[in-house]
Amino acid sequence: MKKSLILYIFISIFFLACSSKDNLIIISKNEKYGVFSSKENKFIIKPIFNQISFIDGINTNNANEYFLYEYNNYFGIVSLNEVIYRPIFKKISKFYNKFAVVQENDKFGYIDENLNLVQKPIFKDARDFLFDVSFVQSFSNDKYACIDKNMNLLTDFLYDEIYSFSNGFVRFKKDNKWGFLNNKCEEVILAKHDFVYDFIDGVAKVIDGEKIYFLKQDRLK
Image (cartoon, rainbow, N blue to C red; front, side):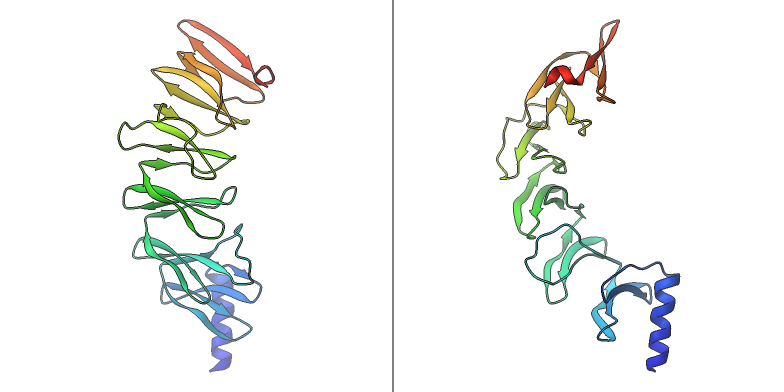
């Protein structure tokens, strides 16, 4: 029996493309996933999940491992000892700068690196913390605002559209005009252009009517 189990684990690792860390191995059994301890030679987390994966980049202050799991198309977080979050989230993003976006029903919020729900899901959209600021969208007017890591709004909900950071700047649309914010959420280029493109290699293309010209990133600092 013991030899059969060892053979099963060997096949799981090399043919089911499962991941491992230290003595813990994520393997599939009967099309469900769990966590097996090669040191203890048993499942630490039973194979009951649709998917399960290690969570990296978090501060747990102990040697415990934490896992993101999917169960019946919803996501939760579990450790080797307890369930941290039941499968109530439609989405749990990767951690960026110590925060992850979570989606509950149609609302978005944040959890921090200690796996605390620091911002209850109340927003129509929430973006990753690629810098010390991010962006959230209001249900009331569909516009975006800046938010910091303390979950304080830095602006009102002013922006019709917000794009991803590129070279430390993000382009935005306000009152049907375009401009740029820096990574402190300061409007370094006011919303006055018909259209702007992302900064690439320090240069952004700008369109005003029939005119096309370029902005140099180093002039914004």
